[in-house]
Length: 195
Image (cartoon, rainbow, N blue to C red; front, side):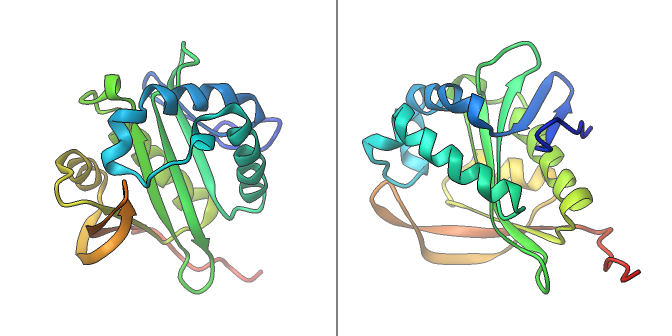
């Protein structure tokens, strides 16, 4: 369900979860999320500088993200329970293009303590559908390391299909890693009417 907000940023919900596009008020919440999960996420993410885990670093980053969201060039969603401010996960959509590809790339992570509860599966399905319905996206691209079985299950459950393998695709935790390439196609996409 999409609930328009004063700032016109998406505020979504599914079951007991709320999934909000990041805003200025979220800086400390997201800093705490990444600080709490620093060691847990390290094997799956690029090497991070100390600034990535600081309030000052995220203040700058949120300003950039807010500008990108304003122009529909990227979205950065925070996942939480309806009754809690604690961030349980993040979903980012980048490389957003309209004509002619109408596509974007998704990345995500989930708190170590929130694993195995279907949280990312439900949140990702909700944000993908919001992009399909509201941003006119036709294709969402994703990639995961072959050893990441949890990520494979999430993507498959949400409707992503495997398209290939990319060698040395991303520099993860200081090492070039192969990734399996996936895509989720909007089956109901139609050209916008020119009227």
